[in-house]
Length: 202
Ligand SMILES: [Cu+2]
Image (cartoon, rainbow, N blue to C red; front, side, top):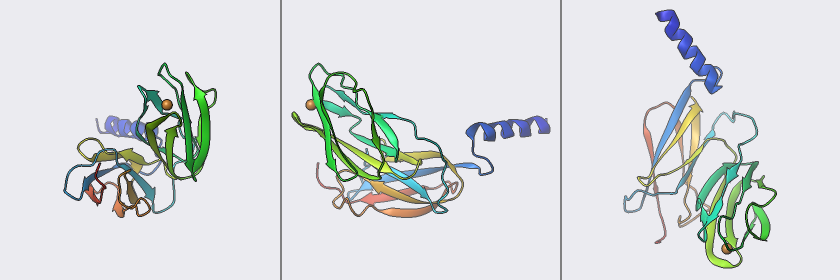
């Protein structure tokens, strides 16, 4: 029986592709200055050792649905190709003047032929040049370990190698977007790291 159990464990470690490092998770809660949970905050973890899983990041999608970008907030690893399908009956344009990605997809229906590759870390704020209310935020980060908080303010970054990380948090209503709070944590400590943000009114 013992032998069978150890084989099962070995099989699981191999299927996760983690090599000798055990998998662990990072759990974060984000609250605002009143203690209320903050949804749509981005949390990302940078290994202090600098070691990260290699490989091309999977692609991502930001839809246009009923005159809105969906999701409103995204986070991807540097190098990710994002497709921008327009699911509305009216044409939309997608553009950004952000230093991390200055681009424009001229007015279109359907799915543009080529995705946009986000090859530089930083914040990308996107809009549509015919619908001023359309806005989307994309944080491009130099790590594959990231998550977004849910409506209860919690985010889990799962299956990270068991080591120490710098956790960074960003939210689109932060009073100072250039001062993203950070905390150092060890994965696997089984604790929730709490961030308290100063947010502008909605
Ligand atoms: Cu539009």
